[in-house]
Length: 36
Image (cartoon, rainbow, N blue to C red; front, top):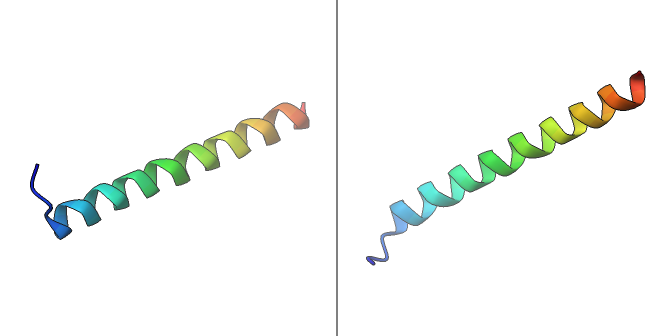
């Protein structure tokens, strides 16, 4: 496996985006559940 800095940066960016989306969805679901 090549140690390409650009590839590493891209993977980190994707992982960060997925983590952010999961956190937002979890907060939204919690807010929705507590609002009922």
